[in-house]
Length: 334
Image (cartoon, rainbow, N blue to C red; front, side):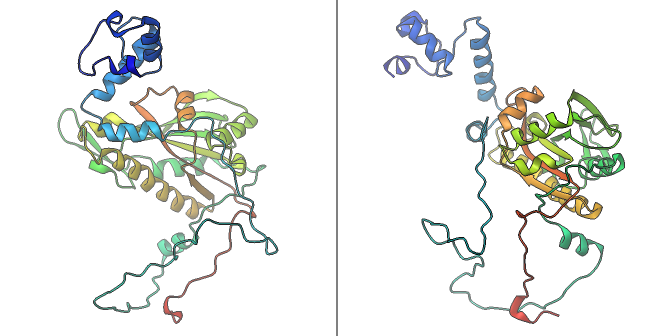
C-alpha cells in the first residue's frame, strides 16, 4: 500500500523512484498502476485505462459494468416446493405483493373493461418457459421470423452523410439501436449448429463457430451460469451492445449505460411476444457469464459486451413452471 500511494495519479514517474521495481511491476500487472513498458500485458492494461479515461464512458457506469460481470459462475437452483415440504426458513417476511400508498387524497375505482383482439391474446399467452422438447427443432422460417421481427431493420432514415438511424419494432435510446444479437443454434432445420451473428443489413446469419448439438447444449448451460433446463432450448440469443454507437451521441452521459440495458429489455419483451404468437416457449435471463461469452465471441472490452440472453424452443410441461390463478380486481370483473 505504501508503494502504491507513493505513485501520483496525475503524472508519470520513473519506476525506480517509485520503490522496489519488482513490487512496482506486480502492482502494474494487477492493474493497480499504469506502466509504459512495451510488455504486451502491461500495454493492454494501459490501453484499457486510457479508454476508461476517455470522454465516451461515464466512470461510474464503467465501474458498474466492470464489477457486475460474471465468469465461470454456477447458479444454485432451488428445488420446486411440494405440498408436504416444510416452509423454507427466511430472514424476514417478503414485502406485500400489492402496494398501496398511505394517506391518499382520494381513491377512484376505474372501469373494469376487458379489451379483446389479437394483441390481447398474445399478451395473455406471453410467459416464461423452462421446459423444452430436446428432440424437436425449429424451422428455418420460424428462426427467420424471430430475427427479422425482433432485431431486424424495418426502415431507414438518413440524417446527413455520416448518420443513418434505423426503425425497429422496439424503442431505443436516441433511436441508435446499438444492440447486436448472436444466435447460438442447437436445433434448427437446415442450419448448421453453432455460434452465429445476425447481420441485420442483409438479413443474414454469419457462422462464427461451428459446433455439434451436444457442444451447443453444454455451451448454453455454461453461458447461462449452470441453468440446465435451458440446454434443451433450440436456440439461445446473446444480446450485446456496441457502446460507441450510443456514446457517439451521449459521451460520458450519466444515463447512457442505463439506456443500453433498457434497450436490451425492450427487445426481450418483443421477443416474448413474437415467440408467443408463433407458439414457441421463450425465456430471458440476466444470470449469464457475460465475461466468458465476450471472450468466446472475441469482443474487445468496453467496445462491445454481452448485456442479456434470451432463448426459445418447442415447449413441453415443466415442474419449474408455476400455475397462476386469474386475478379479478375487486372480484367482479365482467
